[in-house]
Structures are given as C-alpha cells and as structure tokens.
Image 1: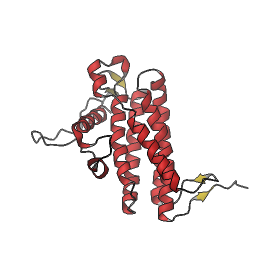
Image 2 (image 1 turned 45 degrees about the horizontal axis):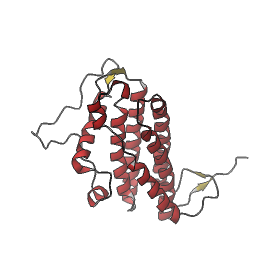
Image 3 (image 1 turned 180 degrees about the vertical axis):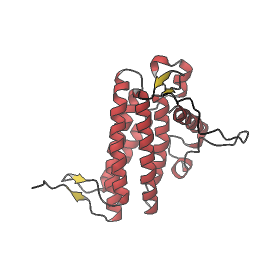
Image 4 (image 1 turned 90 degrees about the horizontal axis):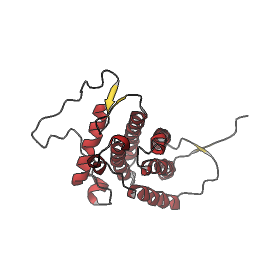
Length: 232
C-alpha cells in the first residue's frame, strides 16, 4: 500500500504539470493520465516493489506509519479498486464507440487526486503536504453537469432496474457499487476531520453519474435493461 500511495502522489504531480487537468480541453477530453512510471527524466525506471510493507504497515504521504487495515488504507484501496473497475468499463465502452468514454478517463485522473487527499491525514499533515494534495470542488460540479445532460436524453425511470443492459452498462453498474463502498470507507475519516469533505461529496455524486451513464450506454446500444419484478 505504501507503493500505491507514492504512485497516487506521482500521478498527482503529473496532473499539476498539465497532463490531466480538471477543466475541459482537447488534451483532457482525448488524452489520458501519464503513467507514474514515466521515465522522461534520467531514464531510470523505479522498482515496483519497496519491501517497506512486509510487516503489515504502510506510510501515508505525511510519513506516518499505520497498519495496513487502517481506515485510510481501506479507503485508498477501495478507491484504487474503483479506478480499476472504471478502466474495465472504459474498455467495453471504447469497443462500442461511446462518446462519453473521455469522461471516464478524466474521472480516473480525479480519483488519483482524491486518493492523494485521503493519503494525507490532517492530523499529521504539514502545510506543505496540504498544499500538494488539496481536492477541488470543481469536479463535483462537472459530474452534476454531465448527469443533467444525460438525464435530458434518457426516458423517465418508472421502475426499479437491475444491473444489465449490455456489457458496457453492466460494467458501469459494477463500478457504481464499488463507488458506493468507497464512499462508505471514506465517510468515517471525513467525519473525523482527517479528509476534505469534498472527497465524500465527489464519490456520492460519482455513483449517481455511473448509474445515469450506465442507463445511457444501454439506451445508445439498444440493449434492454432488466426491470425488477417481485419474486413469487
């Protein structure tokens, strides 16, 4: 997990250099985050293993050592799982030529920012740490705009639907459920004042986005969503 925290922060720094910004542009809509293993410096590639977590402890960005089952690392791990699920859903969406796929790229970049904030507990953070890992509320508003745009095109929801509607839609629903779990993992440390409240707000809004875009994918593919029927 310590290596995961470092990867999050490496990507965060790349984002700050302009490779994946939070404002709409050609670069962000059609580009992707650069790898944390980028070798555009001296050409050396860092090792994937650090051995620092072999005894069941990992480090936060502030240098604090905590057990791997700590709430901070539970939240980080679930956020990483969410990004992985989004990556899989993105591949299905690319195969079907969905126009919203660049939004998924951008969301994965935002999740790296989110992870940076989670990895920097306020109780052990210096001002220099906090400046590097602030989490902006702007991505929340962006999600809301996307949700509203998709909702305008969707038929009214009159029944409970089950995760279905084709591979793209179903994969987005899987990501949605992981997002809900990430929100549950983050909530306790937000209430404790260790993490920016915007982190929990973003995850809450992201699950709404994923539900909406899953329905949109099914509609665009002409796939039938399965309607809940009470078992008899």
